[in-house]
Image 1 (tube, rainbow, N blue to C red):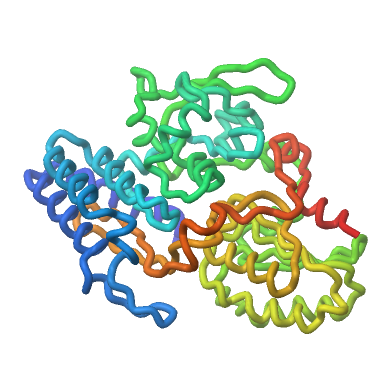
Image 2 (tube, rainbow, N blue to C red):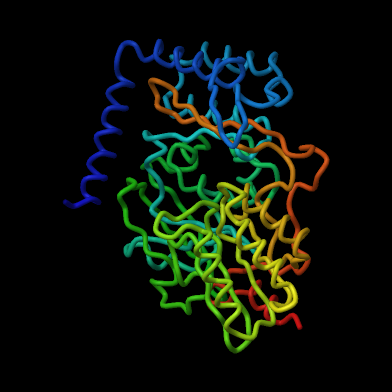
Length: 424
């Protein structure tokens, strides 16, 4: 069976069903039902009861503090009054804005289709020196490796504060990381009236050392295949990008006597539980002279913070034989991965290297979800407060800063790993 074809057909059928649903006479009634369902499950006690990690949850933790009822209820009332005048995409954006108003990065709305399924056939990444095009289909290959100067007449920096109210974030790092994805979405770009009259988007791009150039891009569906910058431009592959899709892996670097461990998901891989992986990685450390251990959390968006336990305890037992521990962090280090970085720093005296994290060291977590019955929007909310949300820094900062620039990408360099390996 062609699984890719089957999945694409399923997506198209789902989008078609949503389109038909939007045209039925009961559309307004359906949205009213969804908004009431949303209000009940976000704040009313007794809803969304579940057991996770020993915690019984009853809606959003500290709902009245994060979403003061007068303003929350007023926003919903206003939205109800305007349903008939708003498109489904605009209603979705209003809900995104309401959920994001708590300034809790885990609290968000995921849209299943409509204008949120269509996007620019370009992938963006926000580096320390600006937004760049990092993936594209063959017809837009000339855009790869270029810095984004303007999007529909505005610079990325000008658009950032306009996007901010719709993006759930607790710091500037998370805002920029998420904005790179938002700036692709047709519904978002249309909301800010950025596409031209023909429905296409004009972009001004600039490659290093060259003059700016303009392209016009049509929106495409989710089935469009994008080619990454490294593959298309035949760039050197840095070590951290050599095992894409793996939950965790390790490699002994003989030249520097380093055990490099990349930990990408805080969850057990069914093919190899993390405890077994940790046992093998530690056996590798026992079999070679080790000057340092590097644990790379830069691609880790979280999960269960307890999974890393066997590796942490095993390294603690070998403190006198494995040298110093370095933990690589960055914008994608989030949630439980950030917790792990803090634990390794505290318990193993690990040195943090790289860039500031997209997650906050203290705040709301243990996320749960519910689905609105008609629009099928998924709403994610949090059920636990760790520490004091407003008492900690908004990001976990590296002790050895090593930001990655577009020039580093084009050269296949990894400044964070280089910085860790350069330490005596």
